[in-house]
Length: 568
Image 1 (cartoon, helix red, strand yellow):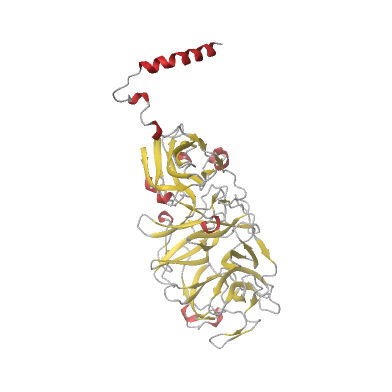
Image 2 (spheres, one colour):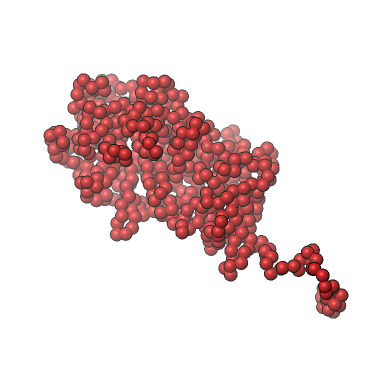
């Protein structure tokens, strides 16, 4: 009743109040009546989904669920009926194909085991390439004969990436007849005067490579620890060797070169502090700006610390110099207490569009397992510079939390790097917020943005851009973690073209999922982020992220911000 009387009085008095209002002079700015047609309306809630699950994937995100079992992966991309298809082969030699890198279909009889062949077992670590000259897919592999512990190198061919691959036979450029009883490569054929001649050599882990500068062909491989030709003693270590090829079936044994020595920065050189045990294996090669990057795995494949490292040279056959841990030498690996990844190594590279990915195997049990249970994973690779200004490779992984799918698959790109970035408050390292690099390690890691108190981080684009998702990556340091984004504001363009502001309050980092529950050794599982999947892909020109240091901490850090947008 009182409300009704009050409303009636307002109606009766409103004309009198209006009549008493001044009719000349400027309007008072405090009245709020000046130019109200151009004023920004009140902020509206932003509709979104909070992506925290590490299971499955959608059109934008994937997770390394370790559900595709296998080890030592190799990849090749082919176009089929106007559709991009990804082919993978793993130790065994088993083949699979996929259209999105997540759902894999096995290829039956991709490599029927050769009959009446020198090879009998242990078909390990295949590597596939396409030979444009011969119009053949070449699948390199190692295998063991049935009579001893040796391993030799061979190759099978097919006109299709689906196979069936058949062991190559024929006469090579040296006039040597290679039949089914003859391994393609046998280092006993080396000239005995060669300084690396050992008679029989147990060789595994081939990696064929075409030098982009000269066009010359090379084959990298591992002289594997194991029994030698006398079958009575073990070689001390596994190390990476390389040689030039006259063609893909004719090695130039005179060029055989030792590329790495376990525990040494260069073969015969100073000791390295990288704890390599007795293993350098699983080689691969990249080239960038006059530098050759030999990448390889250290430690035993059954070891939790199995990891991928890098060495550089100005020549395909070295001398290669290993990069130490503190200068970013480890590309991919795990820190000691991690319970979400183990044994991440024996990798390959996959270029998808203009993005580079590292594909590798990991132990199927995330804390630790055995060689009998390994699975395939992949993560984004970026080029960066270390403290010496040296260009190095860095993996935004290993991860198990949601990550962006490659742009060629999702149609989405990270546009955060296109924005201007500024920060209000006490924040250092703003330049690291949008450099595309997610820090993964406490030692040998990459710089992060650190702040105290409350800060506001602003990303501004020159024009409106559609935004599908926002990712705010946490630090890898437990003592510097943030727990939420206090408020996120988006300056948007509405459906009618007018400007509006939308907001998300209290977007939480999933502490329960991403922080170890072991009180004796609490740590943040790196590579994880607040992931906000925005509905209806609003057009955004500016994002303002307000964050505060959690109670009990003196400061906090953000590793990276990614703004995901549909490609133009």
